[in-house]
Image (cartoon, rainbow, N blue to C red; front, side):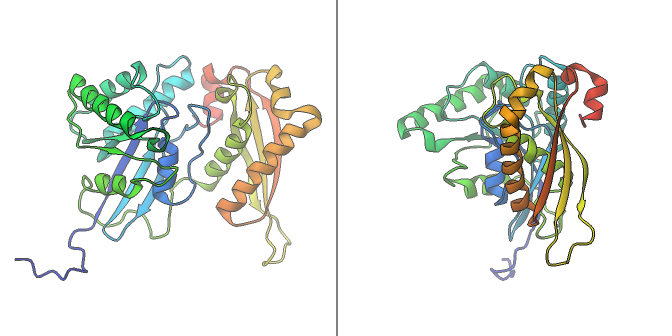
Length: 313
């Protein structure tokens, strides 16, 4: 019989989980909900995640490190191929995979492709997450859970568990954390208490600018937007109690014809992008921000290896 007092946790666990799913399956929103603050950009546009962002969930019994991957898809460009490589490399390195299958959509060829690919990583446990549970009636959820079970059987996956969840309403977010923690190895925390991500601030800032630029633009534009940070630092000569963070950033597009969409009439759209991005950056970093944005063209950067390297892919 164990003599460990009830309030002492005998086995602290720490390890990695990743969320995968079709573009726009709710992976980023779920990551932010579990971490408790925004560290990953979310957008109504699919395919907005481009980095494997690590979000850190601190619990009394465990430290769960979430790797948010781009949506796996059949690639049409060199950028698409590189994003898929990021997904597959991540799968091979984590302790558990959470596969997001939104309840608001019927399971289709994209989900089948994804789950078939995931089945190839045979040794890693897989938890099926029926995301966007708040958008469907209970009868539809029952149907969806049966479809998930059938999909797993058809490709030879035995789900470790199947969990309906809504990151937006908070429904069963803690249950998802509990399920993922079950598969982590026993070990010490890997990150200091209080850290929520290991992404450099410049990357997070660039992503928030890109999110602001994505909102409200035409469907063909999301893939064409990339952001680089030229310079970022506290302005010199300011009193300590009144800091100001200067950020100089570039929004890269692929064609001259796209410039007008992002800049807008007399610069109105770009000013709106700047104001929205600045609010998000100030909320993230807790410092007033001066944001200077420039729109530039890098012709067909998604298919040009040199441009991809320059833009960080």
